[in-house]
Image (tube, rainbow, N blue to C red; front, side, top):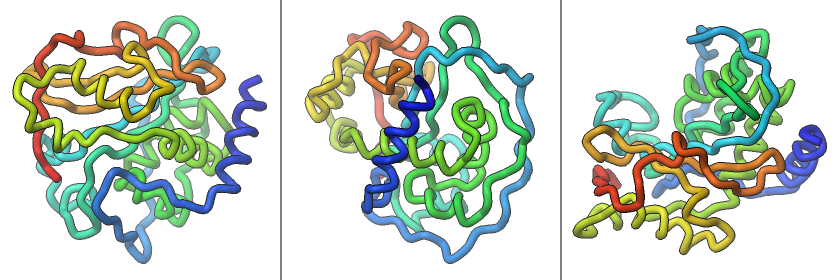
Length: 235
């Protein structure tokens, strides 16, 4: 069943002519990129049955503020100014810890990574997400990135810069703004990742094995709707 679902998503990807972009005013691809450094696993290989998926969208201004990575494509402003970017598509286990590090560790070709930099403006992050997560979903990085792009294009991301100006903002306000823009989604299917001091870090969308929205587990759902939320204004 998983292969059939991936085949359907791949067909849609191959017939789509619009590139997948992060939430940005503009994005200029570099003419070429260097081969990525080998990705070192941060844990043991784990091949477990997939029970669903998480699409993680990072709020780029918060990452750039906290990392101090001012020279990168994501944060320098020279190639684009980004809002939400695709962090990755993660398989979730039916029970227990998620699958991870299922491949042979061979990094994707630089040209393949370059084509997806307007969706995920970091070649290192793209290579890491394939090695840790994508290799547990499909045998080819091309498939992983194209499926990720289909899901990314299928939703409208909130204008977090506008929301950052709302007095008394809560996590529920962000979820409701997402659902208003995406009527097929419900509040309980939209996870929010915030720092311990309440700053937005990411939105996490929860899918079942057929890539349909599902209720997020408590750990992925994040703070309650009533929890105050702050958004670093970067756009």
